[in-house]
Image (cartoon, rainbow, N blue to C red; front, top):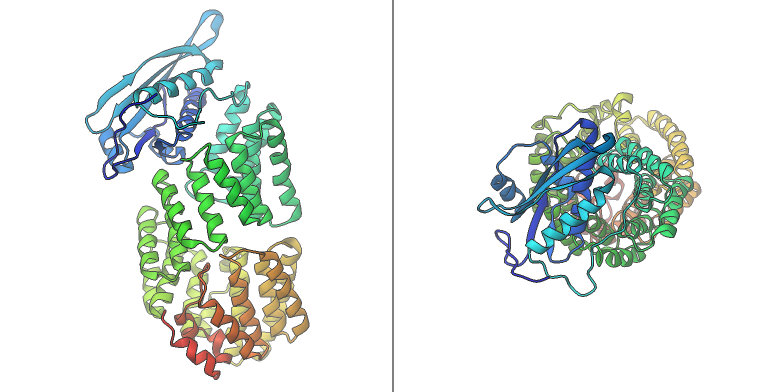
Length: 558
């Protein structure tokens, strides 16, 4: 197939399209058919290099929305919209049939490039989807590159109940903002899908992805890694060349094995089959960050955000990466963009405030950002309020934030950091007895976390500082060494362990060891990178202030 391709506004080369959710005009129970059509057509088109397809995650935001297509096209920067309806009827012998009416519309003039109608049995959903995809490709005049053959694809499953569970799993997992609750719910749906149809390779792959996410973010344990590995092995046996399986393999290699070089190779291989998959591009961006190639990572994240503009966490990820490179002005602009789209997201406000602190060295300016937010009273902001009071040396006020209610709302790794700094706040107040009591309580808490999350380096690192605060130097050194082993080759989050190690050495009264590590860190881009403003303000570095080498560090550019 060949023909002229029309570029989108502002881009002279690439054609862009969105597949809007097909409208179900029958009983609510039949919406899965419409959702399935949308999902599979989007996959078909996204497998072509000649066209950029807006992610299903973004497209679903327009489900049930009545807006002019020209507005949607402008908002998503697309040239074409594919939309359609699904009507239900009873056929012979009471068998359910569907009438699918797709239409391809050119946004600039609302011209109907193509429309048709298909009447079929419910069981033929994948046949209809393949035919619609073929016709769209033909009418857009797309040229396939050598080796590119997206159609026909093998049916993902013959069982519609399994497919319904699979679609529900995708809906839960692909929320604009990941949450452990949603991901765990998606696991249940994917498990239901493969219980109904054990040969459903795509569902096995998605189950592995969800379990890998939990292994990385929620439950860092060998048992959880196995829960991610087993469905991946099953999917690989069933259909090793399936794009979803290749992506799940890369996701597992990244999230569970920490082998970032191998994960990059796997993602590049998968991209040959699904070059315009936003999830793949996002994951590649994250892997490149772990390999220390932050500039390349930002480019991949921007590509992912262009395909999935409603997933604002991608904008946040770009901001986080800019901050890691100490490009605070660019980071602030992306944080502002994320906040504008989702002003109720606590993490956006917290990160923007702390970026402002690194940028200006002004706790008051950072506090004004928090106070201007609609979530200013959310207990999840207590860590940021603590840090700003701590840096302002208002230790009593800082400690007032460390209530059980506030701490319970923090991510465990963040809580580990805050309670460790709380001991330093007590010491700076002259409350040595209270500091030792708090450190001992922290030791019990952190030791328990290390026991339940043995693969989490952050908990071990803060346990090392806590042991140093208790005068148990040998144990502290052993824990920090294990933390370094756990982060492996992670060039994005890994250097943070050196930062905590510097704090440990400051506590142990070895300032030259601490300063040496900080000096190296100031030359590295990494997640939450230490800034010269932090060095000037942070009371944790007070034991280093008499060191001439530390004074030299303060003169560096921010």
